[in-house]
Length: 555
Image (tube, rainbow, N blue to C red; front, side, top):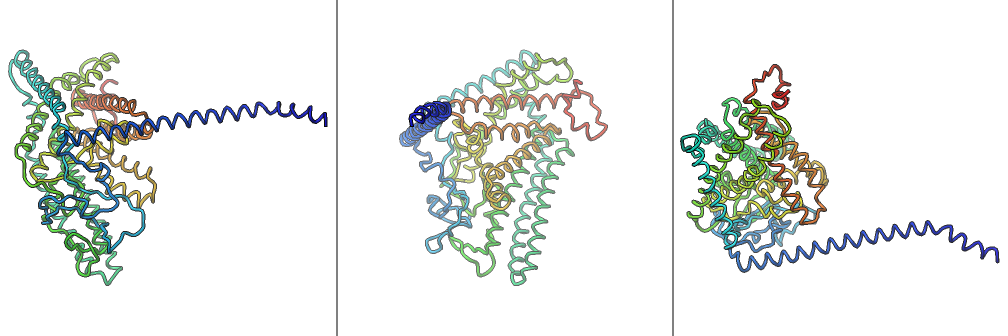
């Protein structure tokens, strides 16, 4: 026993390194857990304080701003009470409520099945419209007015004293909008095609209903029409893209044609996807609800479809919230902003883009000269980025909304406060994001990848990057997939890398990457465009078109 008592401390002492290792691991785990808890607690407190500040601002300084929960835009339960009672709607509903095939009432409860949320339209103003009601923000708006005037004076004095004339950027407009009348002719023909789609859809639905007793023939008819529909969409996209090359359209005219064609494609798919689900499910609409159809399926009237084609949304509903009247002064101000930003773009093109890269390919280019040109374009590119957001997502969409009395003006959210790329992509362009979520992500998540959020999200990014690259590539008439790499590669990577970033650092890095990325993007496309224009390059095979002109010009 004495020998055992002497050996016992020795055995315990021999195991002490193992105990110390475990203790160190537990202490590190404890420290990490405490650090994570403190970080999450700090973020939660910041969120609560920020919400309180925003609520106070809304109560005291934003009288016309949306007071509802920002997350209420997407709800799993969609009823007519989701939309406030406003003026008349396209289909004659006095309340202008948005309905959907997933609408349920107390008599017809929703089945207990997990579904992705549905879009709910609510009458509300845009963020900047509400913010500019505050005197401090309105002062900043006036400062930007003065900056625009200074740009104008700079161009006037430069043209007068250096060029000996006053052009005001009209030469850029004249060159960029060449053959615009051809674009308008194509635009009219595209709308004829889009209207024909409505009657084709109506014919499919009625014939399908008549073939209901013969299920095999009904499936054959539906599959045949589906193949014809997909083929027509591909032909529609091909024709608009090929016409840019056939007409040799300049950049601005090509962008107008391609963006309008893309918008119409998205509108057509939204209408077909939304109403095909109702036809297949056998739903008929009576007043403000949907129920099983005993007769022919419900097909929206033509005026609902026509209003949707011009409404500033890509999500189809039979009715939308409407404003009681048109504020003509508000609409005129938005239109003047569109014109002002267009002139600003002309100034930036003449004094920065053309000045930096107009002789690219004709002058010697080393690393120092290239770096100076790239950093010289950082601030002008940031102005192009911010003004592009303001031009399209605020001024133009609010202008068209006012003319159409479209009530839901939430075309963007406060993306400038985002600290992750998740938040930035969700809030930057709500119009396109809603379409991608409703008609791409949900279908991929439900039918293709069967519950895989990552795979569905990656497919959304891939499609969006391809469409962006297709528009830029055909508008500039070049194969130079920088946008695809930046958006589909770097952008997707940053989504996953920045998810746990602290708020202050995340927002700073977001803005740094946006300014740097847009500067590089615009500079690289400008270099490729002028290198292709200035260098006498031979294209002997199709592989020559895949090599960047910048590379071939200096090598």
